[in-house]
Image (cartoon, rainbow, N blue to C red; front, side):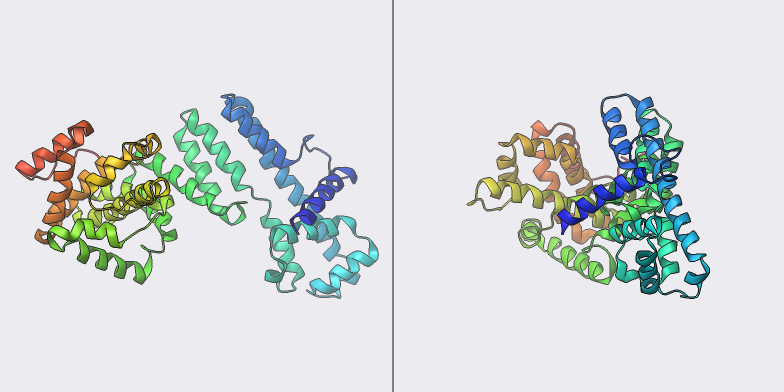
Length: 378
């Protein structure tokens, strides 16, 4: 089936450039080629050429679908076709019978991009969807990336917002998470924390363990385990596993933001998820190479982690020790029942002076717990 689609795409591209009137004022390459060319220039630091390629890709895709839209409008304006009403089936038969090549190409392209069943047999719905295909969210994103690397954060943010608004047409729907993270980063840099929070929460709408009523039930159960005395923390990591790395940074960022703004309950919940995801990935990776490993404590886990450079890099990327420190701080300030796991986390950090800053901070907290005066978000 995939081979047939690839063959069709090859024919489609040939047809678009072969039929008179369809290729005028276009660049010499199809829009997707211009996009890939722009990525090549971008990765090689030639941002001027990259921007030109991305803008060409956006323009050419819009031109292509505008002409397909026009072909459908012209077809639907034919008196014979108007008498067929909104019947896509009858109109398809007319296209084949009368050799309406351009309209036929437009419909075949639509069916490749959009499920035919969802059109419910409506020709006007087909026209509407062809019109919507003019949007090119990948090009908008890469234009944003180019402006971001050039330091034009406001322009870049606008481009990411366009790409996000057009997310229904992403080739890879999950790429919208990357777009949202880019928006989060710029909003954080601009200290627009309210909007940063909204975008991060939007990322978490894709987190089934967090979102909705079932998420609230899960969080309550997790908290109950954590508060179970000296055994709470190791039991928590023994019972629960969650490796959804796509949402880890959103949880971590929100946890730090809520801690900085004094909302310790929210901070603790988000940092709990970040802590769980980070440790799940570490445990799974250790088990992948050492099948007889059994998690008992954070100490026995970190001893194994430090033997593997790839995991050492991972804990640096996800700010592992910082996450543990602020998770403990949020727990401690969230209520008396959570102070035991908070002290356990600080104790773990304090036993590892090689960690540096976070070990020293944990020692200070164990001597005299205090709420840090955070001037800006950590």
